[in-house]
Image (cartoon, rainbow over all chains, first blue to last red; front, top):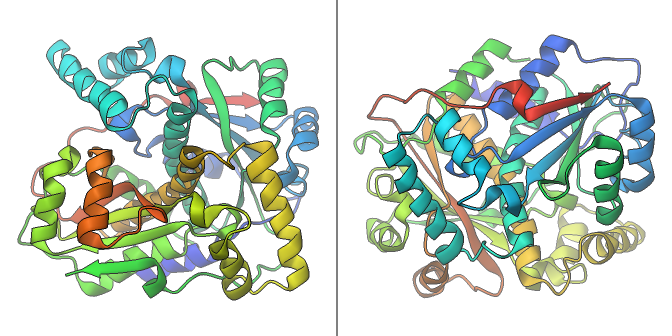
Length: 221
Length: 221
């Protein structure tokens, strides 16, 4: 049980930190902790359709910087910089190898249970949401799951006073090429969904702006 | 600063809780706290493209149950049941009224800053990601943001020993109709992106299964 006031404090501490103190490094223990909260994040059907690239090499960061307008201040100064990949259709289709591997080797389901779940997953993909045969929609669906991990990483970081900045601003086509050429990523399997930089703030945080609670909620009693 | 061990404990406490103790209710203070962590969640450009419907009316829950195969156990037993909506193209296009309202009235930007940001947002939507003129892609992009709020709600709930279950399993077409007919939702403005039930567990939690950290990360040093 964690104190609610402390949790809300962390949520208010978190902000999109556009530039970090380049001299302050996150300890290995703290960064492992942040990654662990990504690993423990839930995902649709428990398929964990993600991969986290931790880019510490400054030459690679320079290359990213050329095509990532949303990370001009964070790429050079972040203690840790993470590119988040989401799985594409090739591996996320209901009858694909990766899905079978997850159910068998990670979830340890019986053959019977695998058959049942596969059927459910097929209905979900095919009948309910028209994901099959729609490259972009299935990638976006994988991407949604990665935003759960993204959120948890930022929140857990804030809870130990580590700052972060989520990044969606980059040139998509150029990014795909860079991932293939310099990061060895098979673009038929994975695509970049977003990025997140971690470090310690150097500037003061601006005031948080949000809609009021009654503007974003509606009760049906 | 919150203790890392306590945070990881909460992440392990959280699981997809398929049925709740129908007799245990979450206090108003605790549920307000959970909603507050959704409200404080970050989103792309800070546009908060979400709405949270809290469905406490049991007749409405019955209607949801008919088309939501992923919530058969949670709809009748959850202390609080939330349908999360994401904004659609009509309100999320770079030149739409809602976007202008957010920049002016919520972010309190100057006219100059609004013009700058609008340009950036247009480039993001149009040039980088081909979101404009793609109903589904722009809705999926809004939806991704809602998964940040979803994650934060589940995590903050777990931190105060409240259980949750995220739900993607429903009939999409029927859901759109139900939202229009019984919830008064304008389907040109909002669509259902996912749901999340909250309450207190009645069954023991199963063992957590996850890939190992080295299977989901790659370091570039």
